[in-house]
Amino acid sequence: MNNIVKPDTKDRFEQLRTPFYYYDTDLLADTLAVIKQETSKHEGYQLHYAIKACANPKVLRQIQQAGFGADCVSGGEIKVCLENGFPANEIVFAGVGKADWEIELALEAGIQYFNVESIPELEVIADIATRMNKVANVSFRINPNVGAHTHANITTGLAENKFGIAMEDMEHVIRAAQSLACIRFVGLHFHIGSQILEMDDFEALCHRINELQDRLEAEGITEVKNINVGGGLGIDYNDPDGHPIPDFHAYFETYARHLKLRPGQHLHFELGRAVVGQCGSLITRCLYVKQAKAKQFVIVDAGMTDLIRPALYGAHHCIQNLSSTAPLQTYDIVGPVCESSDTFATGYELPLTNRGDLIAIRSAGAYGEIMASHYNCRELPMAYTSEDLISQN
Ligand code: LLP
Image 1: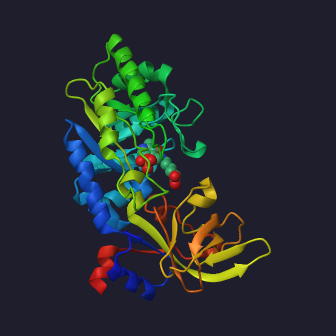
Image 2 (image 1 turned 120 degrees about the vertical axis):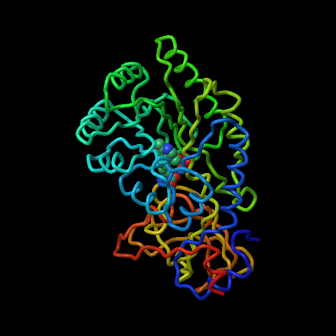
Image 3 (image 1 turned 135 degrees about the horizontal axis):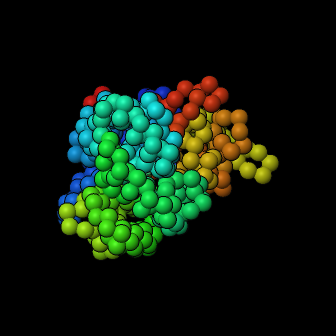
């Protein structure tokens, strides 16, 4: 019934203190292999893993060893990448609010390029680079005004979002960059949102990029070395066992078919969720089953402090009782935190559940552990890989 939890690790779960994250190393390896295979079919395709999705050191190392670069959005992420073996020249750095120390850190380390989100930011990078006697590679994040069929909080490519430079300012910023000695213009960056399952949305982005490239060429701007299309490929939260690996073939083919790369131009991707989402589960234990007037609650020892996605976005995660195969009952599955939004699911069917049962909250590898907090002075969740548990047996 559950592909993720292997029979030999299931027993080990019983001995561990819950809640904890569990990462399936084999599934991650298979996912990385598919990505490699699909990208290698196309000339110049390069993946920078979006470390914001999961920065667990063991997960990171596995991704780094598979040969991927990294996409960072803070100085902290750059440090973590460097500590975990990512070469600086394979790190790209985005974010609307880069602080001076983060820019200095990135220049000192010698990252591949900055994804610059505004003209004031370009000016600050130029000042700092001049002072440090460095040249900063910059790519401009252009807001393509392309909507995506996803949650409003994770749509980023619309004109009303805070991200990126407006399309109409594109030529102006490129020319400004080209006039600065300490700045090297290397490309354009886009990202339309996250958890996108409709390839049409990526196709719409391709058409917009084609238009913009034509416009730049007409203006005599031809030195666009890289096109970076961000991340955003979604995963199947409803059926993690049916679709443990996202459809990378369709995803990369969409770009291959619709994006007109210029000769020698590289295409960069910043996938996060699609790489790590399905390999992680949050393992928790039922503390109490509480019969209320209208409902039955399963109260588990994980809360919104361990996995905030349901509380923050109303996100759905499959939940499984690993200890029971009894007939199904309908429950609200909630955590111990003092907030009504500390709810993982309402009206959810689980086998008859008892105190002590182990519960897996699936598809939690991306934006799970990394978004954990200490609210209510709770401890951060522990994390284990399948390899850890096998080697301890
Ligand atoms: N590149 C940029 C510029 C981004 O802003 C993001 C995600 C990515 C790449 C990676 O996107 P992915 O491939 O993972 O979709 N916490 C939310 C998701 C926030 C995504 C933010 N940006 C969630 O739990 O759904």
